[in-house]
Image 1 (cartoon, helix red, strand yellow):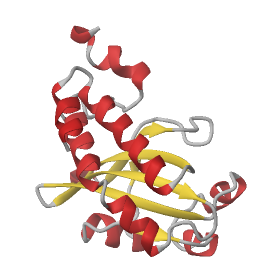
Image 2 (spheres, helix red, strand yellow; image 1 turned 60 degrees about the horizontal axis):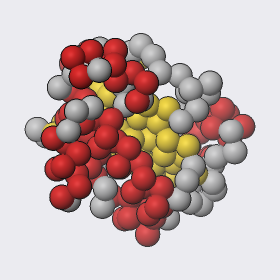
Image 3 (cartoon, one colour; image 1 turned 90 degrees about the horizontal axis):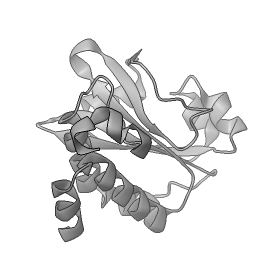
Image 4 (cartoon, rainbow, N blue to C red; image 1 turned 90 degrees about the vertical axis):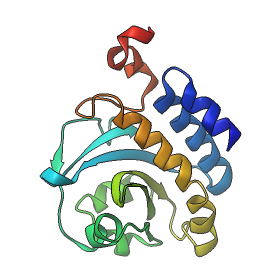
Length: 176
């Protein structure tokens, strides 16, 4: 926890805390594909703010939120969402074929919860069966860092800020 607080006090804090979070998640649960999204619930929309594969999952503008099982679990109930098969993913995500074609068949969405609402999620993809109860429990231990990273990102321009290091100068020119 000391590292988290130290990183939060430094310039580019959102990116530093997010990098710390990614390192921790990769060490604890293994490597797949990670993206992250912010939520504007008053307008029922989300925006991708990080992607390890920008060709498949580009950063971009806001897209509308769908009210489905994912929404009810993560957004309405403030809980994580996870699956272990592509069939379970297909029930909720329209891009399930892309996920499968990228070689992934399970997922976990780890929410950043502040003031009783979800402000963002870290979205993890893995091979079939990857997100077991044990794996999910290890990932949930990182939820305070998830929330800290998104709170720090919200201190910036929420319409355009991302966790990508190459966007830091654009987001914080006073720190360049």
